[in-house]
Length: 128
Image (tube, rainbow, N blue to C red; front, side):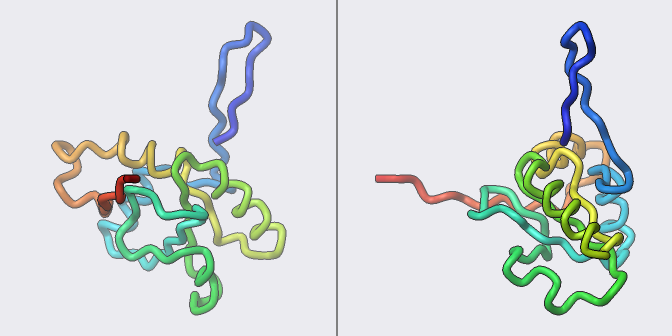
């Protein structure tokens, strides 16, 4: 998620709807059953993931041309870089999850949207 600064150095977060999808819009798509390919672009899986997602290594192998594709990572930065590249390669249907899983989890209060937020929490092994 790109951050720019004003002249007074106040940070401003910029949402680009041509490259990104908001957490709530993605949630609504998933809730409504809209076919959406979810791709995890993180090099290593984290403690959170989206139900039905696949790793980048399997990314577009079996996705249908034109099917909406949403790339995600923890904070949205890696996914945004991938979305830019893929769109430049002629895939305008690819978008990055704005703010990544961190903003997705923060934005979707289960008391408001219900218990199924499509997030899966994984226990990460601890180092010994």
